[in-house]
Image 1 (cartoon, helix red, strand yellow):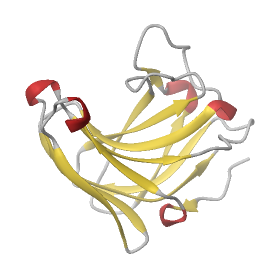
Image 2 (cartoon, one colour):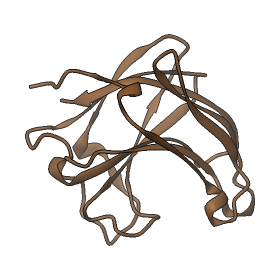
Image 3 (cartoon, helix red, strand yellow):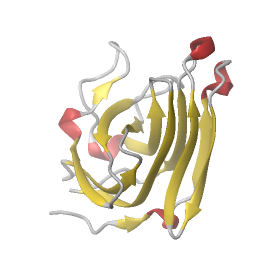
Length: 155
């Protein structure tokens, strides 16, 4: 059973960039008309390559969840959701899945089984109750990022 979508402005978001590890990407995350908007310049120079807005999900996802449903729009680029769990102790560990954006708001469903681990020492896919944070991420290539998330929920 699908969970109702929860507006992005119901969460506290934290902005992070690759500058924490010497990268040079820059940007910002802000609430804009109730939606989270992540914008900036992603640069792979100096071993960098990401900007991110992350929120805590201390209760995880419902145990019966099989995926996430998002309402998103952007500049036509590919963006990512990163999930951290009770089993991702190191800062560079996460589960990732990409999605495409367009100028108009669209709903996207991301099955949990399709999230890939960032390293070989991690389990194959995240368990719903273990999820502890969700990140909206511009990642992996040199580009101008502009992506918005108005709401999300479990399916």
